[in-house]
Amino acid sequence: METCQIVGFPRGVQGKQIPETMLPKLWGAVEQSADVVVITDCSGMMEYVNPAFEGLTGYSREEAIGQTLRLVIDQEANGSYEEMWQTVLSGKVFRGLMPGRKKTGESFIVEKTLSPLRDNDGRITHFISNDRDITERRRLEAQLQQAQKMDAIGRLAGGVAHDFNNLLMVISAYAELMQDSLPAEHPLQRHVEEIRGAARRAAELTRQLLAFGRKQMQALQVLDLNDILQDIARMLPRLIGEDIQLTFVPGRDLGKVRADAVQIEQIVMNLAANARDAMVHGGRLTIETANVRLDEAYRQRHSIVPPGDYVLLAVTDSGQGISPQHLAHVFEPFYTTKEEGRGTGLGLATVYGIVKQNGGFVWVYSEPGLGTTFKIYLPRVLTGIKEIQAAKPLEQSPPGGCETLLLVEDEAAVRKSTREFLMMSGYSVLEAPNGEEALQISRHHDGNIDLMITDVVMPQLSGAKLAEELAKERPAMKVLFVSGYAENTVLRHGAIDVSTRFLQKPFSLKTLAHKIREVLEINKSANLVATLPAAQF
Image (cartoon, rainbow, N blue to C red):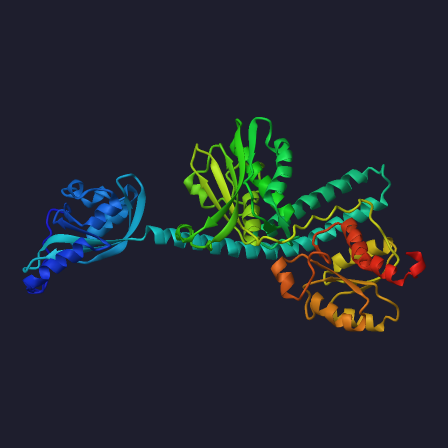
């Protein structure tokens, strides 16, 4: 940068006279500009900086003048810095992004335009730099891109989970049938139990994938988080160990949220397990709740969060923290910094998916050596809504029956194993591979059909449309829907009662047996009372 002379620049361009009356206005425009304006000499030493420079960088005018632009350029941008000077010394204007570093050490990024200033003879005498701070814009863009990436991965996960669920249905169903047909002391019982155990673990992975994709089936209830967390806090010491001190700080007069109690338990258990792994030598785990109102000021920092009233669930550990290069990826499925065999990388992905599915937001704050805090914001529901109690678990023994069932399933292996189990349970079973054939079978069957078990997503005629058609012909027939697809896909195929008449694949045959009886018994007791004579009351 010893010489700035450029040969061949057309003379006279720089020689235009500016009226003296305009000079104060030009000076005021530069001084009051919201963008940074810096003028350097031919060697790159700063001769002038405007107040916007001082506001952005933290350096005063006195500290900056006499220094080169390297004073506020990030050291990691050496390549860009050299390219910038090569461009302007060749007589061109440089335009590009440039990372910077404030006096405090905080980083920023600007859109920089560096232009050469020439005298009347075309020689470069100075350079003028115009910088626009886009740090906040880039941060918001990164948030949006991350959200879009997570959505795309979630859709992919939901599709994979469906196909995997059907395979698991076949594996677990035949393993269950085999186990029931073998004597209790048979040596193959242990092998079959290993198969069923592996199928259960694989099913849990698909549930986590669906949770990440925000597509688990939910049993939504109006909940008081404090009540749920009190119960969970009693179980957590067995999960995190005696060397970790657990503290639960319930918020006063906490608002209600609409959520699935089991999913809330999933969130806390996953965060607690993650915290335990971060505190290998013990530490503190704190769970807190509070009512919060997020305003426009918060929205400025977190653009995807609508202002409103929320219930905050915060989980803080005193562990080793998360390094910046990992922090942006912690919610991605299968991303883990743990040793091989110590995790699937789905725990935090599950948390992310559940929170999003419930209309909430989750943020993580962490620094290496200073611990980690996960803040979850769930929308508050209106006061006056009754709290719903969770249903009690079913008895363990699988019930049978003698009713006639119509089984509609397009996966042949799933249909075959399910039919075999239902017939062993005492039911008469009609089967169809799709909705069209199910209609024909129903129309040619003279007797009653007490219950139809149908897959939701099938070619030509969906389960919901099939049920709608048959309801006209068999109004007394009840319906149980099953599917391995995600919730939004299921609900696109029609109005389906996912709370009482739906099973998410994969499920065990015993679970199916209980659900069949549950659906068949709906309203039966009420109908029985209605037909009894008055003397029997």
